[in-house]
Length: 225
Image 1 (tube, one colour):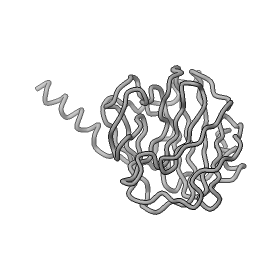
Image 2 (tube, rainbow, N blue to C red):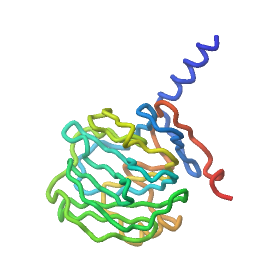
Image 3 (cartoon, rainbow, N blue to C red):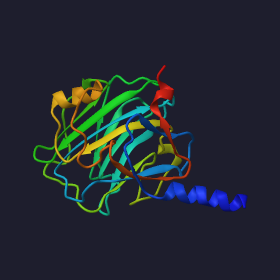
Image 4 (cartoon, helix red, strand yellow):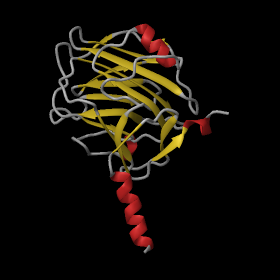
């Protein structure tokens, strides 16, 4: 009987859910290659511009993947990566640029947004309200094909190929994705928890997701005294 209950619990974790996650976080409590969340965008389309915003809290200074979007063509089609040196990488179509000296803090909530525009090739990142310089990344390219979007792991192949050295350990929240470039004022509003347009591709307030392995949905109030 206990084995049957355990099986049902594991099975339930793997089933897709659609929920309003306002005030909630995904908790990834351990190093693994089995724990992750798969996100389903509202529509399938070709992306010529992207904005992704999220918040994260971790007390580890090692390399970690914050957001991984793969397609059949490129494992790193749109990936946000935080390095052990404390800077950030953005990948588009397996090509990356680096952003340095952005103001993150360990064991604090950090707000991150990134934009990429195919028409100009310009990509920019914000961390805790400070904007990076704009850098060239795959001008004229696009993100095409059915996306596999994962939190907690880096996809080295479509939907898999995970490496424990790249996994995320900590808490992720307020994940939004748009198929357009959000303005500086909209990014600022996101950073300061003010009103902003929710993501039309991924919307934390109406999110379809499935959890695999040991991932817990928690109330964000447990992290705020």
